[in-house]
Length: 151
Image (cartoon, rainbow, N blue to C red; front, side, top):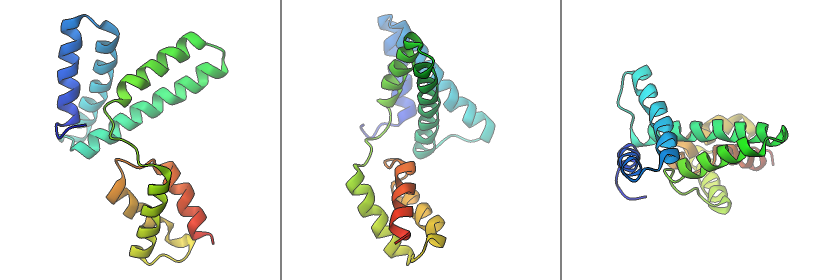
C-alpha cells in the first residue's frame, strides 16, 4: 500500500465502486468503514493509521469466524460470501511478515527486553507489537514467544 492513509483509500475506492455500479463492493466497504467510524465515535478520537489497521483486522477476524461457522454448517453459499468480504477488506491491510521474519523479530525483542523466562512473555509481546504490530500476526507471535521462552 502507498503512503496514503487506509481510511482515505477505502473512501476513494467506495466512491469509485459506487460510480462503477459495483454494489457488492460498495456494501462491503461501507460495512468496514462503519466499523472505523464507530470506533472513532466510541473513543472520541480520529484513529491513527495503526488503530485503523487494528479495526480492519477485527472486522476480518469476525468474517473468519463467520466463515468457519458457515463452513462447519455446510452453508457454502454463506461461507463464500464471507470469503469474498475477507478478500476485499484484506486488500487494505499491510502485507504480513513471513514467519521466519517474525521469529527473528521475537528473538530481537527477547534480547532487547532481556527476557529469560515465560514470565517475561508480556514484555516481549508488547515490544513486538510496538515494533511490528500492524505487520505481524500476533497469534503467531504469541505461539513463537512461548516456544522460545519455554526453553
